[in-house]
Image (cartoon, helix red, strand yellow):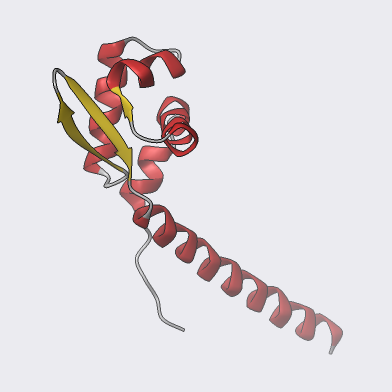
Amino acid sequence: MTTTLAPAPLFDALGDPNRLRIVVRLCDGGPSSTSQVSQAVPVTRQAATKHLELLQAAGLVSSSRRGRERIWTLQTRPLAQASDYLNQLSRRWDAAVDRLRAYVEE
């Protein structure tokens, strides 16, 4: 089985409830401006910007300019990598439980 490192920055970024809400908002609503994101979560526009910048540093979102607004887009690849990692952990856990069961049944 191939071992990959845990995507710690991604999980750290998603560990905050407001950042998780932002990711869900971008997932459900598509690319959104900073003001649209700040209306979807219970934070100020300034706090939303800080959360978005942290999500960007973790590779979860990207941004572009449209006039005076910054538009944020969800990046799905890091989420797919995290899903793969969690599936890998699940398979390892299942194998450990199977070994324990076999040992107990002997």
